[in-house]
Length: 175
Length: 371
Image (cartoon, rainbow over all chains, first blue to last red; front, side, top):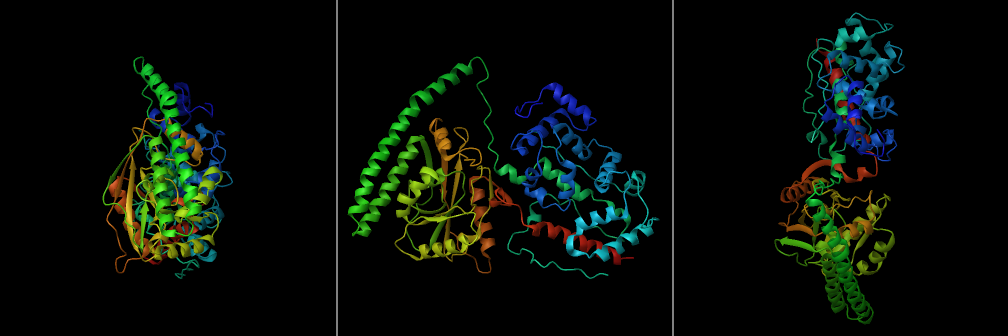
């Protein structure tokens, strides 16, 4: 899968498909590759943070910095695996798993009060004070049966988000 | 508890609402008491981000779609080879010859006219205009340009400006062939810059520098002065500020629309079957672009001179700009996108992100109060 050629072989496509658990069809993978090459302007095999931020729609997203940390240095195979949570074929569990990973910034499998505060800060910016954020989070945590010291694991996320009709899908344009 | 810290930066009331264009219509205002899952569920924001990664309207504006290769089969391939031979071996030298002759005629007439008729300004200007129109016709001939002009030809009247969509620098030449406009352009390096500072200067062209912020005030003043003068050549402005691929239009800059004069829209649409006239300035220099045009079969395009528009009572310059953009986009069959062309060179303003954050924050605090 050279970074200079813009043609994928059948083997490449199948390898990528395996890696993302068949979340995307072969045509979608070809489209994603064209997109990847389009974004990777200097052709070095991965999309740099700057190249991502040159997409204005991405740059105005409140969670862009967080996602950049997860997207940094990914090659095409990993890029497709990253996006697999957004495929229509992805299971609810895969989507919740993705959301958990976004929260769990230190990757230790547990989401702390502070990690949840961080995301809330990204989403609300300067429009809620730190104190208000802590109060809001504490209040909803208590109502759900947790405390400030609770460490949430993936199973907790599954329980909280599981039956909410989570919609997290993106359509890959196929010519 | 329900007091919000309002943003110190004024919400950009200038810009039309981007949310009207972006496909985030699925996000409805949630109701009901705030629960933990409402805070943890970041799926709408993530979906927007992933959507932008997979496809976004801004990048689409600057994508030059390569034509499908049709020469892949045993019968067509020799035909294509023959075509290449004709284009490069026959047409191209012929065109270079035509262009050289044109330049010789132009330069040998221009300099005498410019220097000798220094006293007789009116005649000099008239001849210079004619000569510029001539050299542009030579340029157009050198690409075998087939240009169809629709609508009444621009007239020389004070207090009017012309605006057009922008695909390449050849837009200027295509329009200049019919009418000697004075244009406002980015100052370029190299031989183009030389042409700009000598010949185009005499037409009354105005230069700007994208990277300088103070420049904007100076340019606005120059525009105003030019428009007031009855003798000046009609002013042509490309409000997009950058070249777009002739399938979309990006947001118009309001500079041309707050001069208090009539705006005459011009729509330009190139026929891609013959050649893709989009100048991707990131990928090729202007010289390469011209050479590409000169080795193609033809440049075919339509130019529509549309009905002059005035600022309606109660309309802001931005709304006026959007209205004119709509007129041009509809005429030329282009899609509109809500992005500023200058985002090619810089990041979007943090105001857009702040607006999203404010919306979410308000929703959270409001729902906290509900029982």
